[in-house]
Image (tube, rainbow over the protein chains, first blue to last red):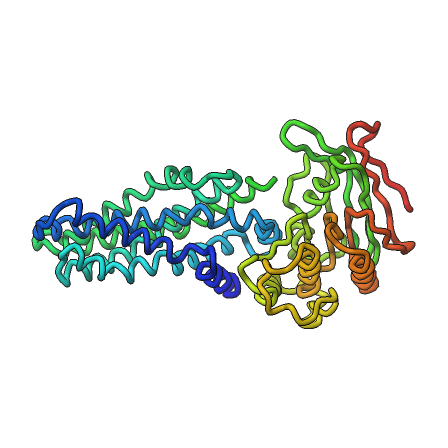
Length: 219
Length: 216
């Protein structure tokens, strides 16, 4: 299983891998916002956390469709389906590797982009923390969409559309936790806990559902 | 160990591809599946590999390990696609599959260098898989059969894109596997040249009974 994790990491940083695509997209989205909104620093600071979260959400949806499709195209998926190792463990490890390659860089890039949005240290820290907690959930939800659309030749947009409604709660609680950290009266912990709960919930449900979808997609 | 198939039939979508196929393979025996294109050879092999559900019939392994759920867990499947990543080197690909698949009880896989030598391509394991020619890629996909031990080999047109020398080499690999008590099911026109080979001729539904088998 460690071999699978390392292989997927390697693949994502080699040519054609999606590791940098997500970060670049994230940077593009966030970097154009100040130009569109104008140089109102207070406004930017206020909408900053939400923009970072929306950018991170869209960026992590970007590479998801290739999660299983690439394996299917070269026949690797067949071999993974045949093994004694339960398929859901394989799916879980693939999700973990996908998150480490595409989700983690978003978390690391967030502070830099926070500066673009005139956010203070507290807001940047809170955004990083919520992204760290919340983005794995997007990957696990996305794995289900990727598994459902695995045999469709242009399933990319379909995966995003399937996944987005389920990812909305992650966005809501992620952003509300950040605002709770900045604005005094609202408590920070409850939305963060709910965000953690969502991540843990989908870490269990996602691989099971994706494994079931992959079994039935084989032809 | 004995692989038993009884009354297998499979459909793809609405169409029945084959009907009532039965065979029994003991240790050291091979089944060669022949037949015209579209007669259901690949479908049969995918059913054996557990990748397609059989419509009817059963597939059993006698004297297999008790905790096994499906014979596919003890099988190698070499399909039309090589299951190797173009971006990774051959050595990375092979060592991944070696670690990921592990060995079935009763044997152990060969190490990488040995396996690459066995398919006749020593010294190019450091190249990315995508750099190799189609024939070399196919040979390296065969090396995958050697790095992790599986008693059952399910091979779908294994010698496509191979030259005559590689055909011979492949026959050698299969025979070595049979000598060790393995089981081979292959869709191939390649003569393996041994008497322990059964032949299954798929006729498709143009034929009367969809498939008959006899000892070659």
